[in-house]
Image 1 (cartoon, one colour):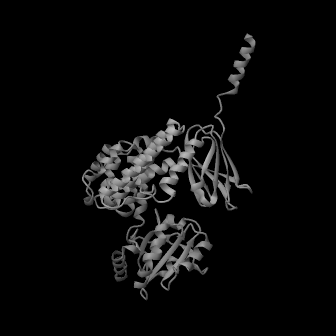
Image 2 (tube, rainbow, N blue to C red):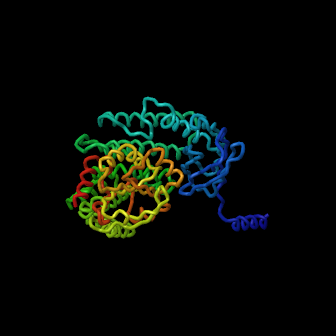
Image 3 (tube, rainbow, N blue to C red):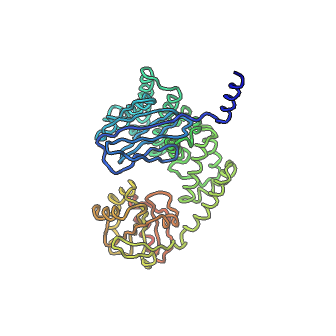
Amino acid sequence: MLPSLWLLALGSAFAGPPQPPRTVLSGRLDHAPAGDSVQLLVGEKRMKAPLGPNGDFRFEVKDLKQNMPMGFSYAGQRTELYLIPGDQLVMHLDFKDFDKTLTYSGRGSEVNNYLAQALYKYAYGPANEFLRIQDFPKGTPAEARQASDALRQSRREFLASYAKAHVLPASFQRDERLSIDITWATMLLAYAARHEPAELPTDYYAFLAQTPVRELCQHLGRSIIDNSLLANFVMGYQYRLAPKGQLSADPAEGPRLYQTAAAEVGDTRAANWAVEMLLFDNIRTNRAGALAFYPAFRQHNRDSATARAVRQAFVSRQRLDAGQPAPAFALRDNTGKQVSLSDFKGKVVYLDFWGTWCGPCMHEMTEAAPALKKQFEGRDVVFLYISVGDAEAKWQKTLVDKQFTSANSVHLRSGGNEEAIAYQVNGYPSYYLIDREGRFVQAYTSRPSEGAKTVAAIEAALAR
């Protein structure tokens, strides 16, 4: 008996630590279009699986060691999942009515059936009395708060009632409550970002004390869904710290900003990230404010890599100062002709980096750019467009379908992003005003939709 026990123990020792259980997602998509791969976003890795002739697919998520929210997509439709190690989840749906028919069976089905029903109720289904998760509140500050509170309360109640009737792990319920609360706070921050500080009550931001930012920061890096939750919150919070995203040129404002962040969200990655975003954006568009804030940043920042990146950003931004030569480029236009920036010497160039995939770009191109171009017809102004990230066929079709071409515009397409990097494009659309000698008048100049401001800038460049 003893030798057998000894051999058993020895065998276990050589076997190593226990392996995590297999985690499988499979399913069937009825009436799905053929051609694409089914995709599963696991952490920051994208897995792909073929869709069988009958609409069948299967993923095995190896080495899943923790609960994780995931993204599932196929042919333009997408949804969120939540997998726990060892789940054997089976998805069922009719692709013609994706969100309404989405159900699950197998281990892990109760959690994911809750998610499917919650997303249909609060995001993708028919409109009801509540805000959509993806929308922002409107009206007065009191009305915005009431609408956001009502949505959060309804989502909390739906989770609680579902958990009474089904087995939902406590860990998942904590994660879902966290997501509900962060989304609520992000809505309120987004509302504030669209209004002047004087329009808000003095206690408007008191809701931040109820926001579980520290808990969310603990999930940073677990999945892109977690990262997106934090990123959306931070994007709103930076405008709380600096209205309209503009840092003050008063050096005393920097320490006050850090004090505010510490009091409201603590010494968290969220606070640091918001400050970093503000600083980098202002280096591009408001260098006086960035320079005034820089001493406070140096005092509080503990990340040497970020410090180096900030210093480099200041150096790089100088290359875009007024009077500096605009980076040269040579690209093909929509007729196949090679065009260089130097071809427009003697004319003022209003340069637009855009893409057909970019909603704000398309809005500017369709709603505001035509009137601006018409106002400068027959004058020494060229409206120069560089499309980034577009396939040629789609770009060409969009130019024709939307009638974007005109006598005073030139349309180019970049097959890579070299030109965007040279011009330090940090978001789309981005606009630049270049003088008759090929030198910057203003980088990150105003948009066509800013009307009189943009017209005045172009007129001033023509008068130089």
